[in-house]
Amino acid sequence: MPEVVTRDPATGRELGRYPAHDEAAVEQALAETAAAAPGWAGTPLGERLALLRTVGTLLTERRDEYAALITAEMGKPLTESLAEIDKCAWNCSVVADLAPDWLADRVIESSAAKSWISYEPLGVIFAVMPWNFPFWQVLRFACAALAAGNTALLKHSPDVTGCALAIEELFAAASGRPGLFRALVIDAERVGPVSRRIIADPRIAAVTLTGSERAGAAVAEAAGTACKKTVLELGGSDPFVVLADASIPAAADAAARSRFGNAGQSCVAAKRFIVVEEVADEFVAALLASLKTMQIGPLARADLRDNAIRQIEETVAAGAALLTGGRPVDGPGHFLEPAVLDHVTPGMAAFTEETFGPVAAVVRARDDDHAVALANDTGFGLGCSVWGATDHALAVGRRIRSGALFVNAPVASDPRLPFGGIGRSGHGRELSAEGVREFTNLRTVAVA
Image (cartoon, rainbow, N blue to C red; front, side, top):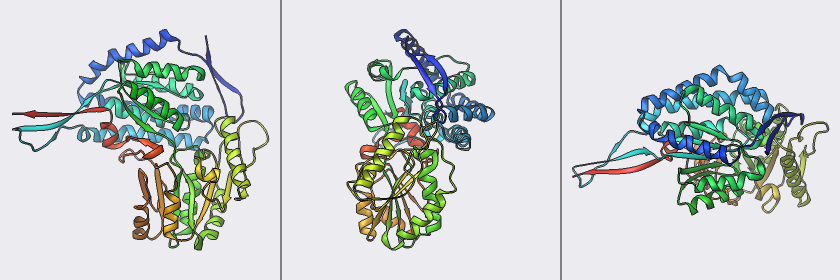
């Protein structure tokens, strides 16, 4: 029987061994979530939302336990792990408070005597989730799916198997119902074929994935073959644009937090710092100063660190300047000195690829028009942050292609705002009313 082994990325020590689910166990999880779906769909909304409030309460009560598990399995500093659990609890409260309005029938004027739109559950939602925010990524999908009346089946990253099983137990403890939320344990070698089989199963109604372009393309292909809806939140190469009239200290401090938080392992982190030449030297100096105040954990795996080092080396070989960092830290774990690259230009690895690690790429722009052109020189389209006088920054930001635009603030997810991208960053939305409604059948009803 294959096993999934989890390891501490800060030390390399083994954390746990978990028997991988065989075909019979996968079938049992599918059967349980499918069997639970009709009853949960028929449960009054108030009762469904009461479950989320209980989940939020348990998250708060167990925050130290869950945060320690996050830090052990994927390496982020404990303060960041605690903040992740707190955000999950907040999301539970927001959905519980606002979902009655989000899911209420919407009256539409038409030629019928009465007509309206209803938001009805789909059934079992299959979720494929990543390791970088092992609780948050799951809770933001699960709260939406369960609030809408669906059940959920999770295939989490093998790296955070302990987190996956802890979340399954969390929902079981909160609900007392079998089958509302199940987590699969699948070894890395079998993720592809098992996921394809699950997506093709007629008991699965829709699929959501947060992860790489490669994984998203594979899931989208399988779901397309089965004619099933997908919500895909993929990679990003978010521009962080600094205009000549920006507050440089504020922009640099936000840039450091956005880029180097979670060791840079975030799809929505600022990746390309596009700075108008007039203030570029001042911004770079301030960024380097802010970086010194950051606590940065290890990367989650050795291959992630190796890829970041490759990107740095290729970018420097193409003509960029490495101002600091970029070397592996001696000793155990997957630590990498945080790197700042200057004079990065289109075509370099740190510009064209998504950098998923503590690597900041500073790109110098001649003026606003050049900054917009540089920002749009990517197939990604997740978030965009623009810094400057408010009206000026907003006008520039509206010319940049992205799923989210933040002015004088770093891009961040908020349970009250829709989150998602365009282009190679995926499609569909998570969070807010739009995210909850993604997991519903938008049904038109007309009465003569």
